Image (cartoon, rainbow, N blue to C red; front, side, top):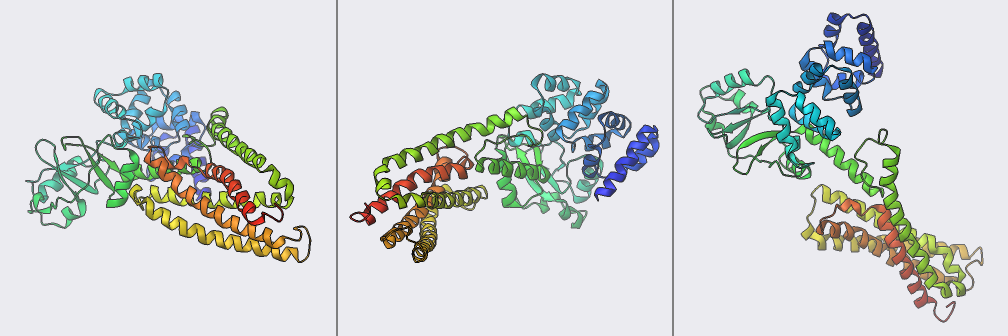
Length: 461
């Protein structure tokens, strides 16, 4: 496939250089816009401008929607204002809204003026909705029929008006005032008798979105109802647009990327890693690094508090990295699992006790596993070395018991912190793995030296 793309790109480039635009149109005609866009993105911007000036407007609009943002911006700069206006008018409303939102405000306002009055009104209405809302993603290209029509009349209407619609998989039924009554899969129209009334196909089983809904909620509704498109209705129940599955795939990828970046201890970049400005990326990473660094300084404070114990039993210092890293790792695991389960809707906040109970059990078992390994590791090592001194059995018991407590505590903290953040209105992904690890490091030291004091008191301490 890469060789085929490279070959096509070379052919397109040659046809552009030779100004053989008739052959160029014939070469592009069989290709889907989604397949063509990555190939064209590799062309020099001058050739890309020539290509878009001579290819059919509909193909240009469809392909433009799939180009990378930077390629779109460079391309528009090579076109005349009428050519750019024609291209923007051909774009689907949801894709155009997303593109305009990414532009500087003055440039976006300029391009809005290039649109036809009807398209400008649509663009302004969609841009008026909050960022990351359903209203920003919806398209007005849908097919709606009336319940009193027959299937024959509905299909004739679809043939007449459905050519440039976003999707024909779902057909919407509305009354005279545009109030949504039902959505029906096109398959039912195709299999029904031509004289059957549309109302006879209705079952009232449909789900809707509201334009102010957050896109994460829309994603959950799509997963729940397994639809290729969902209608968007206003407060009065009037059908004002639809959101399609292809938009939800983009949302799912963006949300997953955002969560992963936050879990890594960084703010969400909001731009591709390869194109984001270096200074902006540093700003987004520096904040959390400073917070984590200040948090880790508390580890040094905690160790200074136990300075006397460390001086009396230097052997305890040998296991500090082992102890605190085990608790941090357990906490990071628990936080990652709980954050992902929350994102997938596997449980709700009111189920916090069930999550706590599971993590108490899991943390205890994991702690026993690690504690047992740590205990026997010291016992075995003591048979070949006197590094742990004559009280190696008590040291082994201290390490084993501390690991049980710290891993249990880390699992509990890692699982509860995302729920607490969710409860107070923050993104659970903010409780990143490094943040949980830093928190458990400090408390883990307290647990470790407290257990050591209880077990080693009267011998090493």
